[in-house]
Image 1: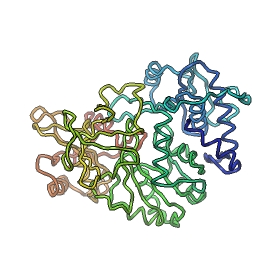
Image 2 (image 1 turned 60 degrees about the horizontal axis):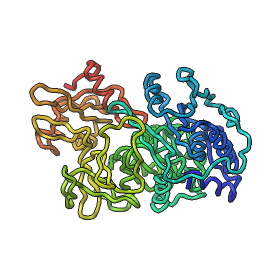
Image 3 (image 1 turned 90 degrees about the horizontal axis):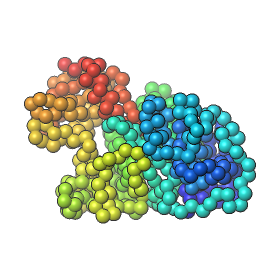
Image 4 (image 1 turned 90 degrees about the vertical axis):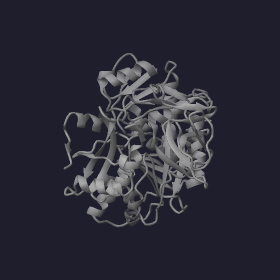
Length: 492
């Protein structure tokens, strides 16, 4: 089965129902099915290989992603903000049959130059009606998508997903959230981020109306929710925080149509939930923990008595085990490496990824460390690739960040380990200030209330412009680089 198969059913059942809205462009399910079918038939005539999409966010990127999947090809979705050298490195490894791009710098024998604002008739391929059998049946075990991590810790990793992995995700999603034809789903982020590509495809699979925005603007997102009576909002914590802050600065009517707010990418600060509920009083909040390689691992839903320090219970179809370095399963409350067994996990790496995951039979780990409590809730201690070793002690930055996230004077915090001749690594907290009168001694005193002394940062760097990856997470490499260049002052 193909991840786009449900489009055909929806086009037959409700041809005039709106399927996609991208600013002033709209497609009904009948129009979307016709466009995807014709594009897929054209892509089937291309030489064997994937279809690379080096495009800005918008309707062409959405249509070509769907068409590549329908054609049984993998859509290799490249970040349009990458430097040209990185684009060429990735293309050399993934070797697509065609590259759809807006950039003449990546033009070559395989490239098709696309106008990002063009209608479907001008996407660079022949769009004659497909003949019967022009688009072959799809084995659900074949790849349909290559996504790339944001590269916040270096070179991005390209991960490959099968049709089956997302079809199984759609099933679990239906159990948890019950999306259907009456829903209006807003995905206000770039489709280069797997969360928003998933939101788009999951919404279409459910027969909902899906709204995409070319770029994230809080005021525009608030307007779109009100204008289209959106019922489901996907977002990362940074986006949700920005929406709340803008709504508080510019009072407006509550977003009464929302019934679900779904968050992924990082755990949101629980103290901020009441502010979100003022903005969307009828919405339930849920957040996911997962990874590019693992897809959904846990879900934490408002109203389910999830412990404050937990990232939730296993997503449907997912089995979680905690293992030691020898691969032995550990009992409840004993921390170790988090392993996941599920039909949702990725196939393999298409680019990079050396040492990116570990396997124990069918179970996969990306190196995160955590424990399961006696009720089956997963608690993360930290990510292995961020661990700091200072004076011989293992320190997880996330534990320290959680303490500072509760401080009212801080808007953002990221804890890094920087080289130190005596300790090996020194703990440094990079902070964005909400209250510029806060002092170093006040932050140290705050941390000492919750942390042992060896985990308390003594050095604080003040970050005036907080750097984010395209996925809305703190850009640790940018923070580290700017500190080494002396661009941040130390808090006194």
